[in-house]
Length: 126
Image (cartoon, rainbow, N blue to C red; front, side):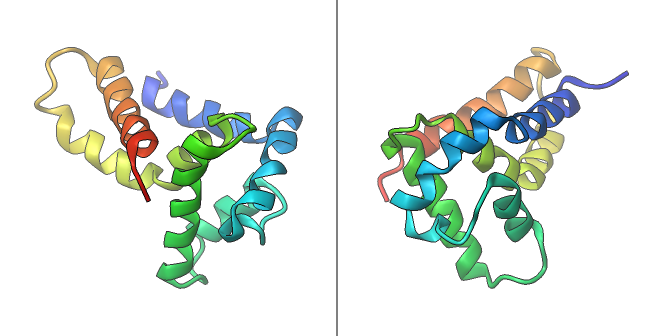
């Protein structure tokens, strides 16, 4: 049985492969300098998960995604999706730690973890 957490991850990955996602992504590198080197979301994800780039470069991309959530004319969905995928290993660890204490069921925990991240990102003043 596939958990809702794994299913969410698969759906996020699938969303990045859609043509509409690519069209909306194209607006981000024009507005956010840290995203300029990336031609699509997949190249951004490879950059963030690979061994090559310096931590400062990775941090710049995360900062740009957080800024894009509240400032992008293309809508925040692209930046939200990419931010969730970039931070997925950490979110997975947080979910794992909270799992034993969570009483309301795992789907609610999944929504709580991702929802709180996105609310914090939208409210962050860089």
